[in-house]
Image (cartoon, rainbow, N blue to C red; front, side, top):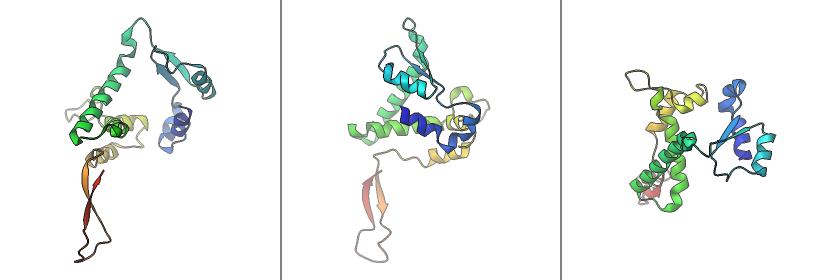
Length: 169
């Protein structure tokens, strides 16, 4: 956790937002308690992070977080089924789904008739990652573990060597 926070705070893409707000100023945990302990409390004090805990009595206090996790889980499963990926690909697929979620506009941010709104990457970096950058990521996205042909640039002319070979993205 400490490495994630320090790496994110040092990322130059978030430099603009760091001038106004501190990244990871508040971290919200559910009431289960698996992340609440002396070690995490010490790390949070050291990094000046405020810990908030969801209500034990009201399940709705974590509804937004649980819904986000559910969407990533469903998308990950769908991507794994689409390419028949083995279970070892779970983390790679979850990262790809999270990337795609950050490139699509949120429903609450869509204002115009075009259906185009600010993207989470765009909002988080205050425009350092632009809408065009997000569109480029979306257009060039290939689902991990997809079989693909890779061209060997060393094969020239009419050599009998194979020009392409099958790989997994």
